[in-house]
Length: 226
Image (cartoon, rainbow, N blue to C red; front, side, top):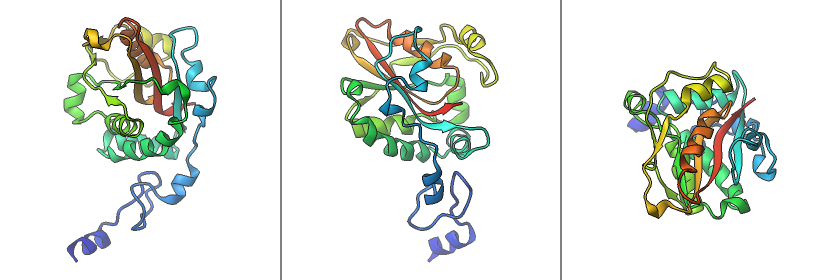
């Protein structure tokens, strides 16, 4: 009875449109779910995410789940995931995508799913890494190892949102280090992140992992910023 009263006074709202959720809905309403701008990148090896890395680093597969448009539903979802502690959003999106990824041939050899790490200062300020729930859901659905200790962010930098690729690449540079052993040789690492803009951060992560002998990398993000 107390829970029912609480729901009446403070009804659960959609993390996308802020409308009241039905009892059968979880964080994201059915209307927002149907309006989601899915990229369908997994169906096309030459998709927009993959094109970010062409001629820069070798990737086995690269894709994003959704298109990110300013002031759109996806921006609101990412903001809730990243700054308002609604980590379950990452898990829900991971559940949507994992079924499609099971049919991607290039991902069948993936051994470890590696989240883009936060610097320790940002992690303690935020209290969590926003991409963890997404990565864990993919790891569980694909039967892979979630490895959040292999990659470490060694330098702290302010947000890079308003910088172009060249500026980001210069700032990020060698921001990531690896904590690898001989057991990691020859593995296929799937790097996951929330939003891809210029691709500089993911490129830096991939370059660090590719220092491991015979390593391969793939990349998946929740959203692609147009």
